[in-house]
Length: 377
Image 1: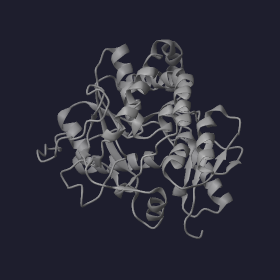
Image 2 (image 1 turned 90 degrees about the vertical axis):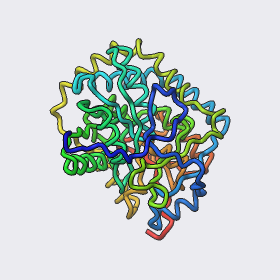
Image 3 (image 1 turned 180 degrees about the vertical axis):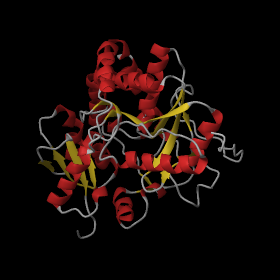
Image 4 (image 1 turned 30 degrees about the horizontal axis):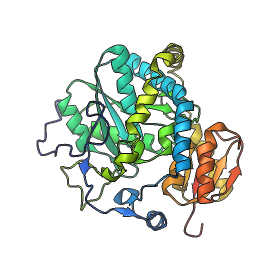
């Protein structure tokens, strides 16, 4: 750690979010005043023409009343399972890493999960861990200024990275590469372990389940992520001493469900803990098992079967498929079983957007969203 010197020029975090201040600190630069949103079709064309997705923002999806109602029903049904997954992950973290930790969630899908893990560890281990949310971007890496800020302010504490789920493992790979680079350049020993609730892609060693189940926070955008936008990295907006940027959507405050979401799941911790303790012990005993990255193999098969040249147009898993329907231009949705209860929100969104559904059996995942190629394949 001695190689890392404090750079006092790193700007302090300037964005708050809608969570309680004690739940999370967003290490992000506030760029709320800058118009960055582009319409779905326009943004999709720009991405497929070479503009990086982190240089602009999607227009936030305004869900229908039916969809919001479905979110609440889904949350009520799945809260016990989500709470158990949080407990299983938290128990593994404490067993493997102890409690001299800083929780670092990957914005933005990781943030509510990080809040829940922080609350769980505080409730059962009486340690109020610091929790930060930082940016990581496929193709550009992790926010190194945010990592420096954390290491300087919490010397001697390990970093535990957190996300919501894995898809084909793209962000997992970015994290591994980013930690290798950071460790090499600054002489530190960051552990690239990524704790997730669901790991259907089999690319993370710390997980709650490998089932591709519906984590309700995947159903919405900023209104379940502290009213924070996706993160932005553009040279004309983010200087060398800045954190990556994000917007706070004050106009969505009356629709915000971020605290409702985490409060609802937290109520199930006590009931979930006995089974979670058993599950965590079983998973810890399997820690020597190699990661198979089997989800990536499924994606290669889909890529071949559908003649898709760009693998980034294939988004596997319930969480990623939901994102495709909320902010990309979907071509079709593949499902392993049309009667899978995890797919109800997917089917509703697909129906609203008139996106065809195809049954594609023998997938690792419950479903897979395929983005429409806008140029000839």
